[in-house]
Length: 236
Image (cartoon, rainbow, N blue to C red; front, side, top):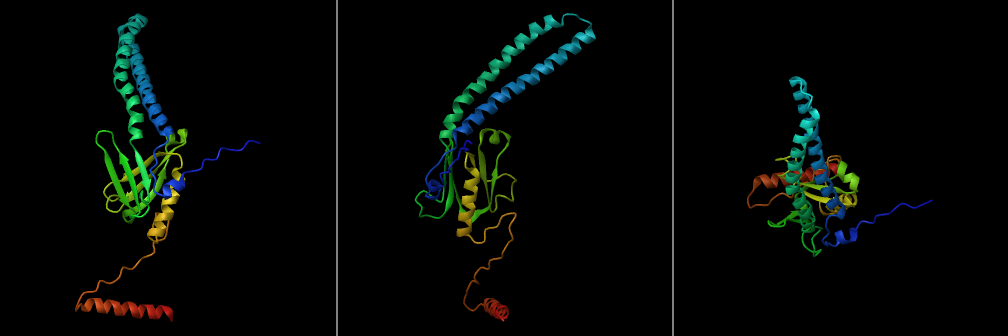
């Protein structure tokens, strides 16, 4: 009986704050989508051309369907692939260069600063984003059809103030083979840093903030006394 392949995620590197990058499978996925899109558009154009040509010969009563097809389709087909090559070939070249520019890090590289998620992207315009743990409101993982085909997925991060303005996640860690393990690791660290951490399936436990103390503030004194009375009643 053959043993299955065990993939050990580099959680140690993640925990120490070291930089990690998307898998090469993410590059293969982007190449596949580009080529699949090119042939998909070609198939739609071919089907539409056949339908239009058949309708023309049907209503005109012409028997030159084969001649029309050979003349017009060869020209249309040639120009389609010329135009497609203009965007497809540069895309195939740029994709691996762009993916090599992506860097992810969790906790912080030094391991001593405020826990955060760091994302760097871009070739010409380079974006570096730091997402502190204290602002994170939700963590989820996502794996689409093509992602599952190549064995990768993404971890999506939502933060306070951003999730209410749009349905999209503020930041994504894409093209990762150990995306589920990474999601669970971030959740564990969030619970240590900010207890309780609330997700859509958990019970919200209210956490009381300390009462701000200002001089000669009667409202603060009343609130403190009421809390002390409530705590005494709970203990009885």
